[in-house]
Length: 126
Image (cartoon, rainbow, N blue to C red):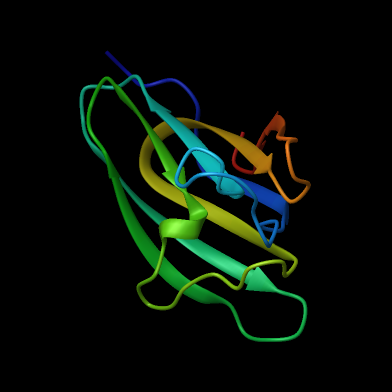
């Protein structure tokens, strides 16, 4: 089966909230990509991060197996370097096979409160 989605996805509004309140890892603030691969081949993603005042960082390699979904906390990307917390960034996700990408943010900066929001990434090649 041919996979659904696109090969290039853009998220312009990243900013991992910091600090967090509550127990880890459930209540750690994060930005996350949810990637759905409906096709028959694995998706070897490359994520590049863009900042306001410095050169892009990446690529961060991420694999999503065929006919699977993977949730990638951007906080967990550390090679080639960790994403700077509480700093504005955008990212581009490139895949050799079509995938679907959603962006999520959990914000637990306020004690006793957790905010969760999500939106679809922009499919730049469709």
